[in-house]
Image (cartoon, rainbow, N blue to C red):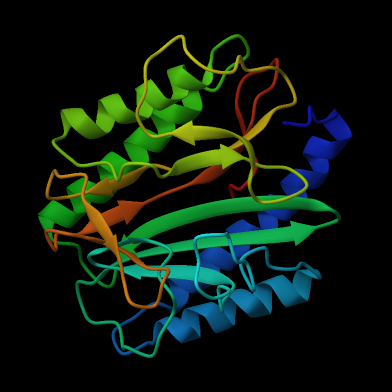
Length: 255
């Protein structure tokens, strides 16, 4: 069940969202050739610690996971779509990196993700990331009072499919509030006019995931967490926590 937030609660969620935004900015700034994903995790931890925030990622273990997640960020590189476990493999020039981060502050959660390349982007990577960001903007624009979850899903999926990209089946966004994952689910593809109707005070984590090769197929790596493309093509993942308000969508995880 989704809790309808008061304006005061939305303000508190915005503070959690600011912490997430700062952590992602720090990780992105740190990323460079030779830097290890574990170092991106370290700088994100420092931001959370300085803010007095906890991580909803660290120790998180859904029923399908064989082990608890060991970091405060997911770092997904190249053919990794989401849930990448930070390791000590140095980043290389041209790598496509997606970083996902959450924060718990004052009893409220924030969740966001960003995709970027290490150094200059190849044209195909730049297009993939730009399309992911366009899909996120379309989804957020559809997150208005009176619309339904299906309208958000349709807006995201239409952008992704028109560009020829795949969408991993069964994964998408979610409600968010006192915990990171709440109802309702927010698919990255769907039929307009279907699903829960959106009301002022609802909060959603909207997160397009795109597969460059155009297929929807993925597999879970041996670490039990990292989702990778079956065809080996690259992937992008972007996300914001958004509040539905009578004045329009409000991004809670922007800098």
